[in-house]
Image (cartoon, rainbow, N blue to C red; front, side, top):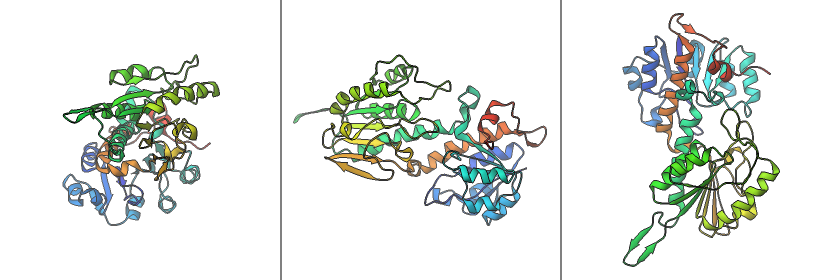
Length: 364
């Protein structure tokens, strides 16, 4: 059985789904690995590094797509790639089913079995495969680094002979994996950090990292059975806006990380709320590609309104492609290891396995 991967379009995606280390791990399962020529050269990883551990280098993507039993990708394949896919192939990646419905329909019509890693259940056994957590962790770190670069003041409190420099105040909206890492990173840099989340259970996590939790009075349960945030009611949104009014006046940097799986990002900061911030403040919107948590936010752009910078993030992992690839490839290997049966020497699509059943995209 052969696992293969072809080059991504590096103008859009710099991550790769198989690293030399993950290729070695896959080969040790008893599988072969094929990668396209110059597969990861843009990351400083040469073809020789793959050859040394036993992977085979193929000259064209077509050769790989025609010969492999399982193909790994970072994102959903292009139309051209789908046209080359052979029947009964297994495809694994972050396929974003709501966004790529037409492509995925074509894939399924070709009798290909597509697994989307964003659909993994939040269970203990799936933690090593959790791409959302591994990539979000990096996103939270990078968000703070980018904000500090754009912020034209010192972040930690400094006591000097010339006077005291006050610490910057950072508000994190959404205390999931990205939000918690943003809190931890901002605290390490000396900022005063507060955070808010619709899930009351996140209060303890925020406070364990040294952040102050800003809560909204509520009686409704805002957490899904899977542990994700769900969409807030209109009443909750009104109370949230009132709480935000005071918080935004005091904070220098706001990092937005709130997402609802399978839906557009909730709009938390209205135009009026953003403009309550001081000139020189920053809003960094990690949810910009899903519609944005903040007004004035556009993916890939920095908009300045009354001296406030609103940074809309796009393809953030392209700024940390090597680290992101290493983590993603480890997640993907764990998934392949669960899918492959050494006894049968074949991929075992066992729908009684919750991991396999939940991540396999079925035709609706």
